[in-house]
Amino acid sequence: MARRDHHTSGRKAGQGSLDRLPGAVLVCAMLAEGSYCATAHAFARDVLRPVALAYDESEEYPLEELRAAAALGLTVFDLPTTYGGGGVERLRERCAVIEELSWGDSPIAWVIGQGGFFAGPILALGSDEQKARWLPPLASGDPPACAVAITEPEHGSDSAAIETVARRVDGGYVIDGHKTFIGNGHIADVCVVFATVEPGSRSRGITAFVVERDDPGFVRGPRLHKMGSRCFPAAEVRLEQCFVPDDRRLGGEGQGFSGLMHVFDLARVQLAASTLGVGRAALELAVDYAKEREAFGQPIHRFQAVSFRLADAKLRLDQARLMTLHAADLADAGEPFSTEAAMAKLAASEASGFATWAAVQTLGGTGYIRDSLAQKWFRDAKLDELWDGTSDIMRLLIARSLFA
Image (cartoon, rainbow, N blue to C red):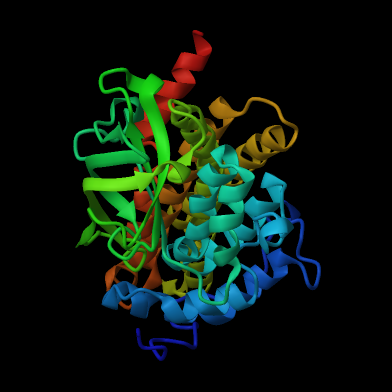
């Protein structure tokens, strides 16, 4: 496992404060003692932040931290109590917990939350029997490694164009295809795979299936080494004449795309909350440093070039948080929120990108060396402008809504 003694004090110039609670009630409306949000903040402060740099360097899978989160219920806080989860149903409340975890370390937070991502299509499309089969194991103290396989080498943003094919045979389907950039792909115990049962029909044929690690033809790996978010692994997945029985299909043939779009909408709001945690951590670090670092006989925050840069970062982060909460509130009210999800994801990821850049810029050389969290957060935040829909795609979705 990764070394746990890598700057655990948290008070070096590149490390930042580990005991600061959110500056605004909007960040976490559930900080009451015993709430999941309070638990997430303490876990992020005491467990995730101290090991973040070590895991970034080693790229090892944070299994110990995953199991510790499972013991606290943080891996399934958002699953129904029927299946052993915490029953946090409101998206606004989920966002609060997610932001706190990512404030500690976003890649480990994504490892912790991957079971919830896997559960999304099952909850949206699965039968009661399928939910009872695959959801309760997620609530165990040693949860399975989960994956959702959508993206292909030639089809990322255009999900309707996927070429992985599920061909009906006696008793089930044979799946053939190649997926890439799949979280947990090389270690997945269970994986929701999106394939088409009608090649060339775009969204009309897309169907979801559950594939298990011992299924013949389910080939996991190789792992893909990333610029940031390193300990949350991504990999290729191949399906080579992979047979799955009928009871592995989620929903009816052709229902996968609608389920996929719903999962994407939820995921984008949750990703917005996650990246806000990264940006908030970076801003706190930069503010602390600007108070302590002196140049030309005074703290550097007294120079407008520094303080205005950090003011802009706070402005962008708080604006994006309001957009994220608005999207979450629409979802909780049962209202359409696809456009608002895209807006929140775009605004939050770009705000976090700016805030992490501002932190590196403020710390200067101290923020650029590899034992500084500033440079790690800068790399981690970039991923949030790319996955679950790039910034270009988010702008396209927003523009389409204007002219629909």
